[in-house]
Image (cartoon, rainbow, N blue to C red; front, side, top):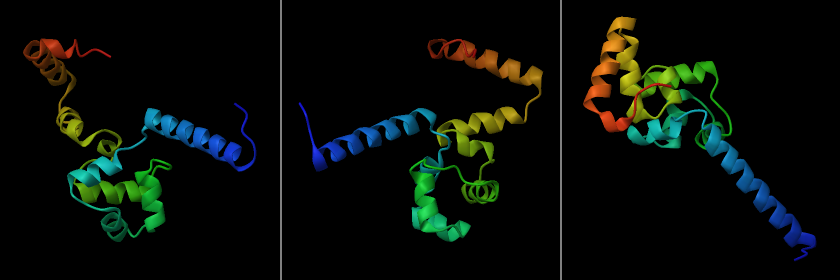
Amino acid sequence: MITTGISARHNLHGMVGASRRMRAAERHSHYIPEWARQHKLSRADIARATGAQKSLVSKWFNDRITPGDSYIEQLAALFGCSRSALFQPPENAWFSEFAAGLDDADRARAREILRLSFPKAGNGQR
């Protein structure tokens, strides 16, 4: 099928848009929308709390850009988490926060307890 004119541009734009969305889903650089949802905060709430422009917050929510360091610091304070927690799903952050306070021996012991307690979850190795 050959398309010309406006419909060809529309089809190309649709393919490019889909390609961008797929790449964004693959890289998922941060989890700010998920953290906001967990805390029942809207984009406008986040813009007010951080002093960021609404358009900038929209870019964060659409994963088009990653917030700069000063915004990351403000967002972590707003959500009550560490800076690094913003780069993982909120439901997983508790474990990272927990493990960060352990020394190597305690981390190995915790890993072994989890492995024995939840054998269907895999071997825990990466």
